[in-house]
Length: 336
Image 1 (tube, one colour):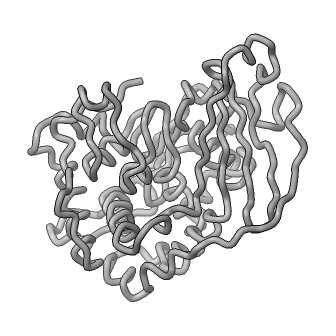
Image 2 (spheres, helix red, strand yellow):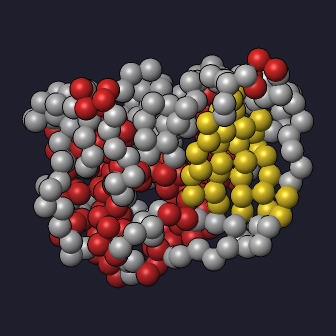
């Protein structure tokens, strides 16, 4: 799943961002970020009420020992304490405000250099919030399990070793097999660190320096943590799962988040309808790796493997998706 501007290898450029270099970090050059504030802490639901350790182990019987149930639950619970408010000013001037719901601390972790320029203020701001606490917890148990099955389907496909047609071979790879590639792209805001490689790591195969920096900003509130140490995604299982959940929950340049698709929040506009994009599991394939797997007919192997994993996990979790729009075979991928 490779694409310098998106794949499930996590070229994760948030919704409304034109390119990674269009952003500035709050502590980088540019206008001074607002002061940090603190509010009352919030209580967040735990995904552990949705799936047990026994169920998790049963879903991934051949998994690498790196991928544990405890790490998955801790990642979901800890990242669930974070929300990100993204505001776009003019066409490509952004501000990111990160809230830690556990402590009530709110701080600006990114603010574009032109944020306070008069020309940037002439158009109304547009804003959206990503609440990571909504990952598989936002709706009914059945709806949450359906979202979890979709998430598991993608991470299983991304990390399977071999193809055994029984869908038991997920979460076997910690990083991609070829680690000789650096996956470095030009980025003013997230420049690569000398000697570091940004190849695919973790359940969703996070790759490219821009995406490591962006994921790090939202997960940690500091872009340099993963830029300086991308190996954290393959040495710390909690960080690995956080990166995968981050990808699942965060809208991209022209795309909704997979979370919004699976929970019904996203509905296609006229352009989407004309390009065959409809709500359902197939749309998540378009989000994850559409340029490679979608609009190629119904016999695309990788697409069908994801669908097979999804149907396998649905059954294992005791639910169905009777109206599943599972295929993206006639769905036009997004272009950058």
